[in-house]
Amino acid sequence: MYTGRIVFSQLIDFLPRHQFDQCVRRYRGNYRTRTFSCFDQYLCMAFAQITYRQSLRDIETCLRAMQSKLYHCGIRGNVSRNTLANANENRDWRIYADFAQILINKARTLYANEDFGIQLNREVYALDSTTIDLCLSLFPWAKFRQHKAAVKVHTLMDLKGSIPTFIRITDGKVHDVNILDDLILEPGAIYVMDRGYLDFARLYTFTQNLSTFITRAKSNFDYRRLYYRRVDKTTGLRCDQTIRLNGFYVSQEYPAVLRRISYFDIETNKKFIFLTNNFTLAALTIAQLYKYRWRIELFFKWIKQYLRIKTFFGTSANAVKTQIWIAISIYVLVAIVKKELNITLSLSEILQILSIVLFEKVPITQVLTKNVSQNRNSQFHNQLLLFNL
Image (cartoon, rainbow, N blue to C red; front, side, top):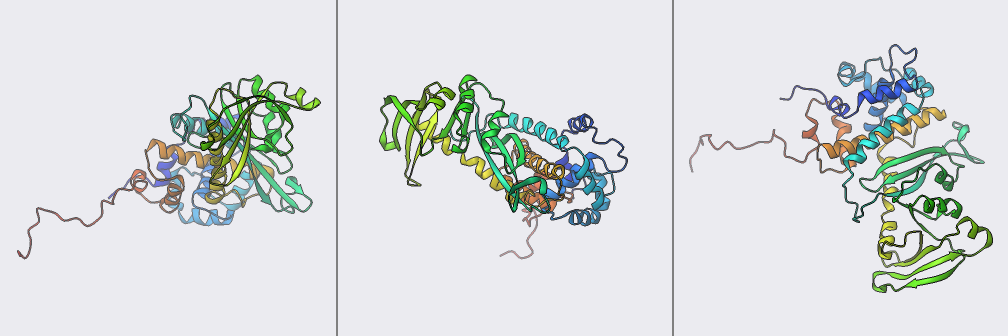
């Protein structure tokens, strides 16, 4: 029988503790803290994310029931609802944002050669945002509309491994297109966006930085055609054109030429008009790259379904951002565990299994593989038979 460490303790081994301590010292997270450190706070919030806890009292009750095992998984301080609430309220959320970025860099290295469906020798990103509705009376700082509050999670995701690389948390009023000002563009990289990011002055910075953007045109798009290329209409393509923008102001915002591609999707029976500044990729590849943008939609759906980012344990902006960043770090941590242990299960299956075996003393590789249990009934061939037929 296995008598080693609990699963939670084995899971924590995948966290770079030294780099976490560096993030804490950077923002003086443990200043005048004696009993409940930032790492204790992180582990309690990680426990809440993995086991689907609903409230601070829920976290306190469950962890106190496992009091004898908390020390072995790294929780040194006494867990109480008020202490955890004060930590979420006052300790800088940037500690956990910086630590999540460290995990993201590690995960991107592991998934650098992951195949997402198209073989390209360059980075491909999808940019989008998701809105999390809040109660206006509890979150007045996040006012969205007259009787509604919300926060937006703007995300740039690497399609290789579906790893988020850039995240910005704002109130609901911030328009998606403003996030383009915060991006650090990589020369040669491809950025796939929906038409909510269609701002030609900002898109021209992609061309100036030698980056590729792929987006959709709006219905009132005004242009003039300069050249066209022949396309195979059996693939769904309808046209491949080189265009220039009409209009005095918009032509000054984007003075270069654009590529306009029309594509008809048989599955959805819809016509799509794509705009890009890339003239070397095949037109069908451009259409396929936009189709893979749905992975970021699945990412938003996944974290809302399997992590705690729709109900919050605190009402301040600091508490909300802390909880969201810790949730994202748990998503990346599960992705790291999956890759390093070479697990075939999906991320959702891994998280569901961890939620029920977190305090069991069993090897983590055993519970996360589909191998048949070693405790099954087996027939020993060297055992004598009682009756010989």
